[in-house]
Image (cartoon, rainbow, N blue to C red):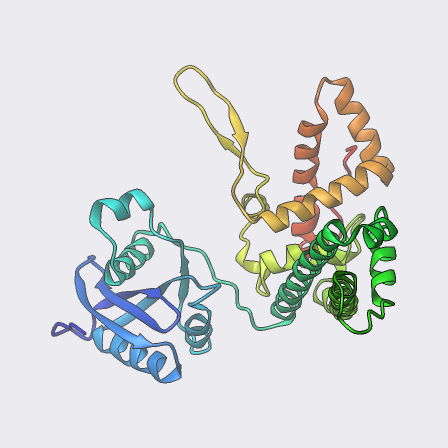
Length: 356
């Protein structure tokens, strides 16, 4: 730890580079002068030491924390509970990092300077209500889906390499039929490759069934949570539990952190970005943002293009204007963002009609 003799009236900004076991903090005064640094363990005692050290530097303006959604989530919540301003800081620019080198104090200082300059101004997710519970359930269900897919692939692989008489019996079956057949295998003594294949297939089939039950239970738990978190969102046409959950998790429990509809569009990867140069003025698609939320918007638009009459009329009109299906879907995603943002922030009861 380094420190300087400080005037208690000095306004300080604290930047924190977060890791699993240790956080490194650097303090800057309001003129950008480096005041000191500190490393603390990632527990409540460490957080208290960091706060005491920061308060000794002067009057705290804000904490700029990198990784507020991962390693920095505990510190971020701990500080907000004590009414300190916490700013979410993105990972340092890689080109700048290559120029100045990489170290934890340097990253912490960069976080503090990003807050001091106004480059970083995002509000971190509060992660303290139903949406955080939804995120946790979605993580568990996603893992179960991945494990189920891996088990199905392994089961199909065993069918391919099984003895020919067993392979001919199982070849061409659907996943459900294959799992059902394999769970009924009774291989008996393991004295042949056929018996071994059946035993292995039965084990995989039981695993798949157990994962099916787990996924169903998690989905059942998610449905009321999503409905309670934002009834107006699930009431929108084409918005199911999965899509609503993805959008809610992206917005966070404190959806007010989305300052505007345009900010939401940028967060979800549907805001056009200027790509002009010289005499050419044009825009391109923003390929950044939250990809799971963007996929949720795609599903909503896809459902509406098939079943929502106002959307179908809109698509027909834009096709006559010479637009491609891909361009139309981009426009529709932006319309959906308008409705979703209104539902999340409860600023209006209904967004403008597509045909307006």
